[in-house]
Structures are given as structure tokens and as C-alpha cells.
Image (tube, rainbow, N blue to C red; front, side, top):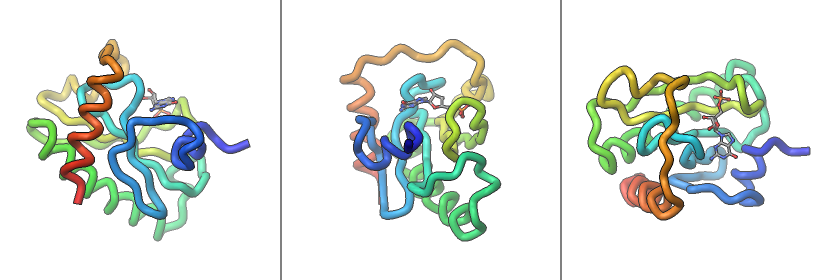
Length: 131
Ligand code: 5GP
């Protein structure tokens, strides 16, 4: 049985997609710590990010860089923060979070409640800046 993230990347489970290519997929985190909290995943199903082969790991970061640039253009912020946790979902992923302060990277804090319209608008805005 494919992981929930593999099923999202395959389009079997809906998501707020922001970018994709043949190897990677980026979408909004459903429980965002900040507006524009994005997850970048490989289509390849590997749980632990440091078990990825070198080429996929490097290419994933280069893809994440393109997403981070789109994110910064879409959502004004000081910098885009990057984090890897992976304690909840067993499919490698990078969190990208637009930061105003270091508190924006606190994954224990209360998550934002956004409407589906707001989530769609944020995703569309980031997608429009993706190059
Ligand atoms: P981690 O595994 O890095 O500790 O956390 C997994 C992240 O994935 C969490 O921030 C959580 O909100 C997000 N997440 C879990 N399930 C889903 C889902 O079905 N859809 C989306 N878009 N995000 C999810």
C-alpha cells in the first residue's frame, strides 16, 4: 500500500499543489505553521530522507530551491526556512516555511486555520511564480 504522500503525488488523494515534475511534487501542508508552508517530496517512496540515493537527494534540494524562490516571490518574508522532521509521515519530505521570525519554524506551536479558498489561493499564487 502506497504512503499517503505517494498517493498525493500520484493525484489519488487531493492536495493544494504548488509545483511538480517527473521526480518531485510540492504541495501545501494541511496543518500549516505559517501561510505558505509547503512540503516537497520525491515521487520515489522512501521513508527516511537520508536513505535516498545521492542523486535524488541532491535533485530534491535543487527542486526545493525553485519552490522556495516561488514561495518568497508569492509570500513576502525575510527568508524561507527549510526543515526535515519526518516523524509523522513515513515518506521523505522537506518543509519550506516563509519566515518573519524564528518562531515561524516552531512545529509545536498551534497550527493556522485556513479556509480551503485561502489554501487554494496561496497554492495558486506560489504556482504562478514557479519557474
Ligand atoms: P513530519 O512527518 O515532518 O513530522 O510531519 C508531517 C507533516 O505532514 C505535518 O506538518 C502534517 O501537517 C503534514 N501532513 C500530514 N498528512 C497530510 C496530508 O494528508 N496532506 C497534507 N497536505 N499534509 C499532511
